[in-house]
Image (cartoon, rainbow, N blue to C red; front, side):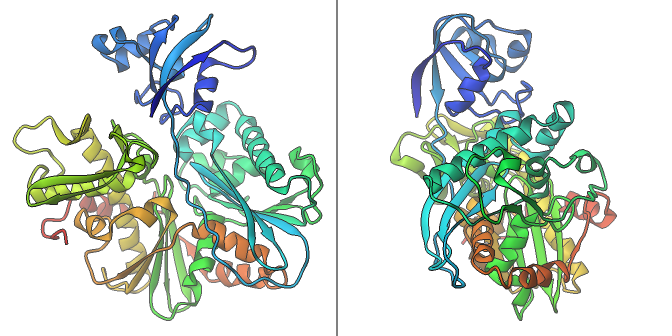
Length: 493
């Protein structure tokens, strides 16, 4: 919810750095391109820049609105900010442990969020959990923004994430010795944590020679307490498909499934895998941050004030707001519901255009979706749907014949399957959809608890998985254009 804070300029820290710590989002990485980091000036002075004038109206500027990414102050200022209050998905399901003593930590290093679990290596019990937003988000909501920043200022993001995770691990351990730490994440997060060059990931065909696991001592990372067997970032599968998907495949048992099975991780970096007859095909799609509220005019993370569910009952709109407060934005699951309702009510055509000359599709309170929001959703869902289509066909299956689909990540855990099918994000078939939660951290914890079988488990995935680069695939490009449109006949049930 909005609250007022007074900020004093600090040596070595910009005003925008302090605002990020207070929960202000920087969707475009501080480039003043999106206007999504608005804060309202209550007292003091924050000069209006030309870039602010391009992003905000004169009425908004007169009302005190400023862009946090460009905000500067030479004296204390009082601002109205909106906290993220994010709901970060964790996992504490009980897993079988081999008999070894001591403590370990499993980490899911996500583009948006961080999850670290302290684990009893003898019992398998999760003794503590820490979550946080990835501090790299200050420099962009998506991986390409981070890569571009790292190419301009190498090392900054590496130091930032190592320091943040080191503090989380230290806080969990509370001085107790650790045996081992395992991390998983997408390829960009792997490279940034491991101080590998991200240059190969900045252009097609996105082939990097540095996909293997990397092991560090605590001293290598600048972490104070020694870790007996070191800190290992698990191996990537290729391109932007990282160890987060690898861990998800293990956690969901996709590699051992008898029937054809897919795993979709619908985050900022959409990762897809299809398993059939002992073979796994995987790919990543640049879905963008729309599924997490990014680049949506009134989009936000799944925190207090976000509309996360919406449906039309007898012509009347019913909605749910996280935290039970007044609506102030919409998160990814609510966005999918809203698009499904707009299609059913005729407010939006299958082409994605608002009908009857409407400027916006009103939802609740001040929250509405504009034409650009529907376009952003179409781009995201089109990329995922086209990627799933292509992998299904390359696996030797007919389109829309997958009997089961696992949905990983927070967005996949909360979306309504009917709405996802209505907008064409998921195939409109009889496939059984399994919300799989944070399968990445669950899979990493499973590997942490089975050291004697770890290499065997990793080999089972790595030796049977082939990566397909979608960016240069003509079939994908054609399917993507086709799948951007919303389906004509897919009733919302």
